Amino acid sequence: MVIKKFQAKTEEEAILLAKNELGKNATVMNIKTVKPKGIQKVFKKASVEVTAAIDEEKDYSNGEEMLLKMQEIQRNIQEAQRMDNEKQQENILVDENTMTIENKLDSLQQMLEKQMQIEEKEDKLEKKEEPLEKNTVKSKSEACIHLVREQLVNNEVEDRYADSILDEIKNTIRKDTEIDQILATIYQKIVLKLGKTNLIENNSGETNYIFFVGPTGVGKTTTIAKIASDLKLRKKAKIALITSDTYRIAAVEQLRTYANILGVPLKVVYSEEEMKNAKDEFAEYDIVLIDTAGRSHKNIEQTEDMERLLNAIPKERRKIYLVLSATTKYKDLVKITETYSKIAKYNLIFTKLDETCCIGNILNIKMLTGAALSYSTSGQMVPDDIEAINPQKIAKQLLGGQ
Figure 1 (spheres, helix red, strand yellow):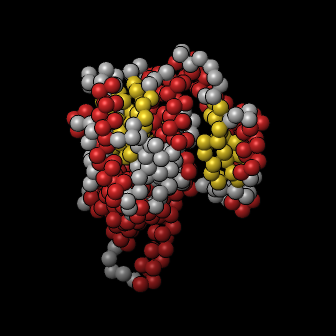
Figure 2 (cartoon, rainbow, N blue to C red; figure 1 turned 60 degrees about the vertical axis):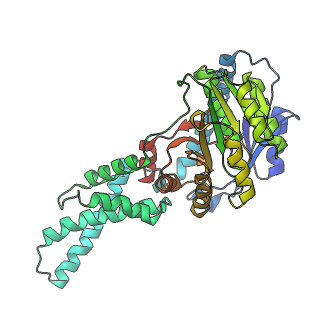
Figure 3 (tube, rainbow, N blue to C red; figure 1 turned 90 degrees about the vertical axis):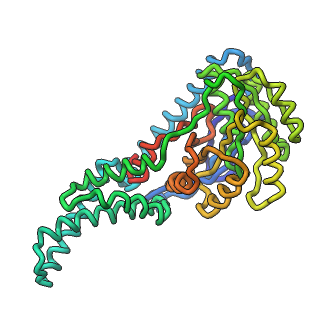
């Protein structure tokens, strides 16, 4: 299967580009509006991006050949994107959100110096009795923490979580603590809050049944395809697929296409009893990945159906991954996680990181639920647009680095 993105002024033009290049049998898998960022918003209009796919109808029994083909496609796309980005950046100022930690430190120091100059003038005018040097040292620490808080909140970290993290480090900061040391302390605290990732591994010696649950439209099926590719091609696991998402015919067919390419079995189940039968049928496999229908957290009946489906597999043999979109509003994420917390213990997957400039919700939901982080996705490319969540990388991004 070849999966590729096409951009044009309108949806119709983007689809036409896809059909012209991939052929009339190309399937449109995703459509989104791409808005220019930063100063480009003044000069450029939004465009439409279409992700399309075509099954090459080749023999994919050689998994390495398939993986090399996917990687080649991905490299071509990345090279095109790199050249496009270089062209766009020629006359564009560096956006604050793309600054490195080191540049951010310089920026903080410059802002603090300006603030200190203002405070020195105020001190002289008010003729304060307290030594100026003492006030200056104290103000630098406080100003640094204030600026970091602004950065976290601008990245959509909830106020209470930002305050909680900063309150924990305030007692460790002396009046003479350097700004870079303050930043390093905050960085380490965020890394600890994000915790260790919990990935899908093939090392238990028994069949593991992995459920993927979550609301509609977050990309569960594509995420499963990416993980299945990694397990089969890189980790050499014996895997099978199950889908209970019978509400969307396209979801079943999409997963069936991936199953055919990977050469793994796929079973469609409609009930708790059929899930139990599928469990017995795949008892000799290492890992069984299970796609579920998107459920509304407001629908109690659907929630109960999901719980019955999960309970068809014993707790000790199953793992549950709640798939969430990084673009979803925090208030909605709270409701979603509360609903699934009543059903079972889960790990967290965040999708669509390429569609948002703010990743504060990753930290928010981690601190809210205490659930382990696992994967993040940032595009439609299978199997490449997925990675284990890296707490160090997330912490740097939250503080304004890359």
